[in-house]
Amino acid sequence: MSSSSGLVSVDYEVFGEVQGVFFRKHTEDQGNKLKLVGWVKNTPRDTVVGQVQGPRETVQIMKNWLRTVGSPMSRIDKVTFTNETQISSLEFSSFTTRY
Image (tube, rainbow, N blue to C red; front, side, top):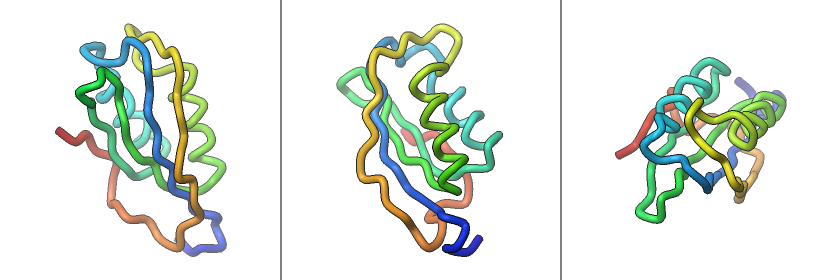
């Protein structure tokens, strides 16, 4: 992918009932389905954090998914997106869960 494809990177944090409800697995599956790269992990604050990278339009689809869908048993109260920047190349090879 070249920088002309409008690659972006964005960090996220999801608040609500997002731990113990397969949120990370569904996030990893959705990221891979959309052919995005990045990661997801639980925090000690009972939130889920991560980073997603890919074409701007596809990252927007993932942001909407994180805001409104999540895993079937999750309850999403709020999502924050920070550090959204244009990047020249992807920094990861796939979408993974970190521990």
